[in-house]
Structures are given as structure tokens and as C-alpha cells.
Length: 284
Length: 209
Image (cartoon, rainbow over the protein chains, first blue to last red):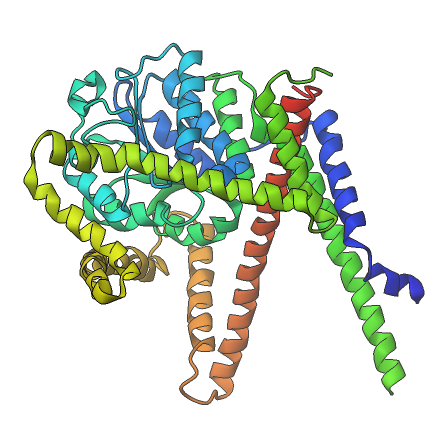
């Protein structure tokens, strides 16, 4: 009986160490578990794939470094997909502290595909206030963003010559870690201007995004690091890139850690039920 | 092993270990990293706000291009600081009223359309519902779940046998929902720690590709 009581009282530091080991081992020696893309990830991929070369994809960075392991791999994989297909990219964001990540991803990926700033991609950056930005771009992007992140007027960027508002954007993706995020884009840009939206969300908020997927308000969804690995898998499978895929690399660790959590839940519950049984018997 | 030569990677590593040290117990190193994070975030935010908003949208048009109408938003913005002066603290109501009025006016119809009307429609009329039998079955289960959960949260009348049964069914649907959220939350937290280990093993130690 003491054994079962001890099960319910394992020191959390021991659990932390076991978890660290379980995560590190697959990173050093990958098991190569088979990846498969979900229909939700395929829907986002197909929507980006369907954008004709020369037309723009708009991506909003609605996250900060706190969600980097989940959403940054999505951003780089989507950028690689778009740039490999000669799709123009417009990057902006509703989260101020995500701007550095956006700039870093654009710089890295544009170099891989020899893309030129202003002709193949534009970084609009961040503006204060969600409503004026999202609604304003529905009328004219220049109203919300007279200049890009670096202060260059949009008129002087060749790529923006034929892009006025959401009607010129075939597909939009919000990489969202909370509010403001994909819900703001759905509420103001889609329901009012009919913008076609896909979302990449942190795993914490993925369950909340399913209703929007079911109604068709979201074209597709990438949920957490698994969603990022699915997109990386699709981009690699179609031969658009062979670059390092951080989310795919993490999937073995993720699977093993989930298994450990499941075992710990079972152990904890077994310990709890036996302890409760003994306590009740003693009370009687 | 290919140890990093970048000073920034070493600083990142040091701060990562400072934060990890909290897993043992609260300590000055953790506090240092925490305060540094808050300070850097605020500093970064102020800098971006000035260069991306304040300077191009207010200072340039008002002081360099002479667009005097911009003095109105400037005055409204300054009213926020009136709360520090008790005699004129009421002035803060002006910008607050404007922001709340505009926000509510724009948000209420949009949120109703996107999160209420569309969701009610989507409770049964999902896209392609009649194309496959499994899609139809899931739409039906989802609709039954919606009704049961709504009945569970209806507290204005004492439950009779039929509504009690539906409410108990609602609990099952709620538990399934909470379980899915918990599962995703576990994945999110594990993802964050994997991200840190990838940084330590790849960027710092260089022992993984």
C-alpha cells in the first residue's frame, strides 16, 4: 500500500528530470516516426498552392517570442512554400513584439530563394489599434499603412502597385497566439470584406478554432507544433524546400513526452484511488 | 560538438538556465532574467511604437508637413496623461469615450455576425454536410451536443427527467471539450520546452543538426 501512496507523491523535480531525458533522447537519436498531414493542414497548403504566381499572400504575425517554437516554424514553412511558387508575400502583424521574428523569417527565407524586397515581398510591420488597421485595409491598405516597416512609402514599392485592398489578396493567414488574432481577422476582415482566411494557432487555442473551421469561416488550420510539422512535411513532400524543419524534428520528442504524461496521469490516478480507499477504510 | 562562438547565443543560454532554475526554486537568477525580459519587452515596444506609429503618423505630418488637423488626435492622446493631475483628471473620459464608442460600434455587429450568427448556422449546416455520411453523422452529434450543453447551462427552471438526462449528456460533451483542450495544452507546453532544448542542443552546443 505504501507503494501506491508513494506513487501519488512523486517529487515534481524527478518528473522534470524524466521529462527532460524523454525530450532530449529523440532529439539526439530520432526515431523517425512517420508524419502525416491532416485535412486541416492540407486545406491551408492547398489554398496557398492555388495562389497564382505573382499574386500576393498576406500573413499576419499575431504572436510573440513566447510562442516561437510553435508558430515560427509555420511562418518559415509557409514563406518557403510561397516564395518557391513565386507568390508575392505581404507580412504584417497585430502583435508588436512579433515584428523582430517576422523580419528575421523574411530575411532568412528570401535569401534562400533570391527574392528582392519591394518586388517579391513587403514587410508592413505593426500599427497600433486592431480595428483601424484591419478595417482600414479593407478600404485601402495605404490608409492603414502609408509606409512599410522601414518607412518607405507603399507607392514606391513596385509589388504594391496593383494591390489596393483585400479584394486583391487571394488568401490570408493569421499566425495567432491569442487576442488579437485570427478571431479579429474573421470578425472584421472576413465577415465584412469576404477575405479568405486560414489560421496557424498555438495548441492551447486550437480547440477554440475548430468551430470556425466547421462553419467554413476558416479555410484550414495548423494547430500547434504538430500543425507546423504537417505543413513542413507537405512543403518537403512537394519538393519546395529541403531546408531544416524544426517542428518535424521535434515530433519524436513530442510523441514520447505525451506518452510519459499519459503514464504519469495513470500512475497519479492509481495512487489517488488507492490512497482514498485506505483513508475511507480508516475513517470507518 | 560545435560550441557556438556567438555572444548572443551564450547570453540566450545563460538566460535560459536562469529561467530553468525556477524549477528547483525561486532564486535571484530567475528574478534577474524575469525582470530583464519585462524591461527589454517594454523598451522594444516603446521603440517600435515611436518609429512605426508616433513618428510617421503624428510627428512628421504635424511638425514637418504642417497638417494642423493632426493636433486633434495629439490633444486626445495627451488627455490620457490627465489622470496624473487630479484637478483635470476628468479629461481622460474624452479619449476613453471615443475609444469605447468606436470599439463597441465596430465590434458588436462584427462579433455578432462572426461568432454568433455564423456559429448558430454552423451548428447544423456545415459545408458539404450531405456529401458524406460521416460528415452528416458528426454534424448531427455536434448539434445534439450543442442542445445538451445549452440545456445544462439553463438554470431558470427546475430540471425534469428529460431535461436532466439532456443536461447529464451535456456534461459528457463538456468533458470531451475540456479533455481536447487539456490535450492541446499539454502539447503547447511540451512544444515550448522542446523549443528551448533545440536551442541548447543545436544553436549552443551544436550537437544536433
